[in-house]
Image (cartoon, rainbow, N blue to C red):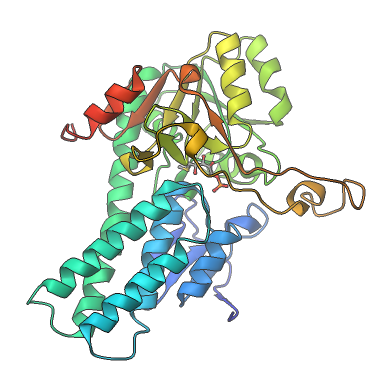
Length: 366
Ligand SMILES: CSC[C@@H](O)[C@@H](O)C(=O)COP(=O)(O)O
C-alpha cells in the first residue's frame, strides 16, 4: 500500500465539498481527522480508495459510492494494454475488489454496478475505439454520479422542507450531511434549505458512539454553516424528547429493504423507538440509490462489525479493560413500523412501504 500524499490544510475549506476529481486523482477530505484538522488526501490508486472507504476516511453511503466510482476510474487507467476485452475484464476485477471495502451501504454496490454497466456499454460503442477514450468515458460516468448526487440531495431537501416549521427542534443521528454526500447531505438537506429560506430549526446532533460522526462531523458542518446545533451524547436523546424539545427526527440510511426496514448507524433503532414513545415523527432521507428492492427485509441486510478498538480506545485512550469482550456492529435495523416516512428525490413515501417503494421505481422524478 502506498502512502497517500496530503495537501496542506486548506484555509478556504468548504465543509460541504469533501470529494473532488482532479484529472489524475481523487482529492478527498480525511473525515477521521475532523474537526481538529482539515486534511485533503490525494488518491491515485484503487487500493488507496479501498483503504479510504474501509478505514472511513470517506464514509456515508452516497460518498462511499462516489469514491468507489472514481476508484474504478483509477483502476481502469492502470490497464497497460490496448485490447478492449482485457480492459473490460480489468474493470470488472477492480469493481469486485472495491466491493469488498464495506458491506452495508448499498450505494457502494449501486455505484460499482453502474460503473461496470457503463464500461460494458462503452466497450460496445464504435465511437470509443482507444483505451484512453474508454477511460475518459468512465471519468464522465463517475463525474455524472457525483453531480447527480448533489442534485438528488437538493431535491430530497425540497421534498423534506414542508415537513418542518420555523422554531422546530429536530434530532439527527450520525452524519448524513454534506460530508457524506456530494453536497447538502440527505438528512441535513432540509436544514440547509431551511437556513437558505430564513427558517430557524434547532438541531440536536447525537454524538453517535463509537466513531462520533455526530460530534466530529454533523456538529462541525452545521456549525460551519451557521445552523443552530446542539451536541448531545446518544443517551441524552430520550431526555431531550421528554422535555418537548424535539418535534421531528430525521436520519440518513445505508440501505432500505423492500419492506421499508432501514439500516443506519448503530443507535438509530433506539432513537426510532424513543421517537415513537414520545409521538415524534421519525423521517428517513435517502436517494433512490439507497433503496434495495433485492433485499426483502432488514434481516437480510449485511451488518458490518468493526474493530473492538473503536469501542475500547475510541477517545484516543484506553477506556475499557484489556481483554474485554466487545460487540461492535456499525449499523442497526429500524423496523418499518417505526418509520413515519422515507424522503427521496422522487418525493415522500409512507406506509405501506413495500407497495409504495415498488411503485416509486415506475414514477418519474417530480
Ligand atoms: C447520507 S449518509 C447516510 C448513512 O450512510 C449515514 O447515516 C451513516 O450511517 C454512515 O455510517 P458510516 O459508518 O459513518 O459510513
